[in-house]
Length: 224
Length: 224
Image (cartoon, rainbow over all chains, first blue to last red; front, side, top):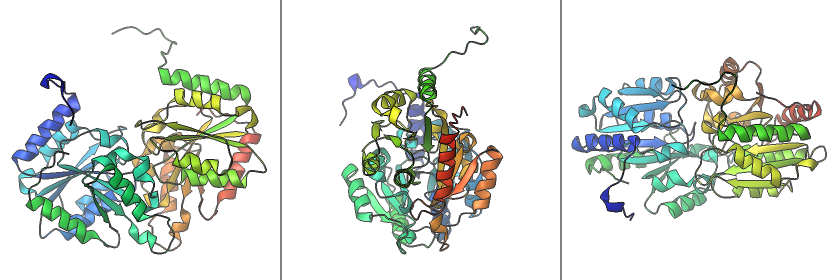
């Protein structure tokens, strides 16, 4: 554990908003998950399928972070889930202040779960706490099994690693050793839950839904 | 507010080193290409195949940028090309100062072409000039055809867009409309050269080699 000098830590602007968001969510007992990955790992497809397939069980809202465009928000809107778009206009990550404003626009009281889809970037978003309950990292098998070793920060900080697009492995068109990726991720993070899925075909998604439903049921607000 | 003397632009530290590198390369008439993409788009595989297949024609050196590990540098070393590894220890992009130091370690006089493989990140590296002759952006079809629209900066600034892993399109396992990606990239950058390739199977690579050889022959030092 880190010793904090005299109990006086000077918080930066982002940390202040992160604490504000964290309190906002804790008071309302809402689970909020910050989804982080490279561009094109499949975050939006995972979210759209999750919302559709859990529609009868839970209500999900989404905060969509993009540098430009509302392409992803449109895909989420098609599921009829409430969505707030944030355009960062060049910035490589979402800030806690942006999340704070977005939370005010979402019908939080009516939701069981809020997803934040961060800007596609495996590096920078991991360094900015948003006040979320937990981070979810997505890695597509097309990206290669060496990514946990090469981009360790987000794998060290995440509650769940979704290894997506596993349908691409079937025909041997992609080299990806799942055991290597798992072992490297676990070296960084002993408790990380690792779920191989395909948001396109649906393979493995029920394990992800089980994890989500259990986390909501337990009302687990993670501080990690 | 302070008045700033017209015509005198105050350069930041990175810009100073970028100009230094640019002069260093121009004096020696060396082409230096800064390769930028998301993690796992195939930069290292493209470089290794390019070095091997052009071995009898030109000498290539590589500056490898990674947050951690020397996994990529090892793959380049296997081709016997000279390589200098930079570990950014968390930073999301290479800096011109790092490139300046790396250029001193490479046998530049004996090389025809220097590649910089930037940190895997489609966002931040585009904002940091390294003094390179030109930028090359790589997009894998597994990432989706909406990436030029969603991450415009690097597509606007690049000389060449390599659309990699086109072998994944053959069996319809990946949805990627090449014409849409091309049109969106050209909206941002009228002169961008777009080459669909597969560094795994070799498809389309000769067009890439033709572009490289022609650029070296013309000794084109791009300022863009």
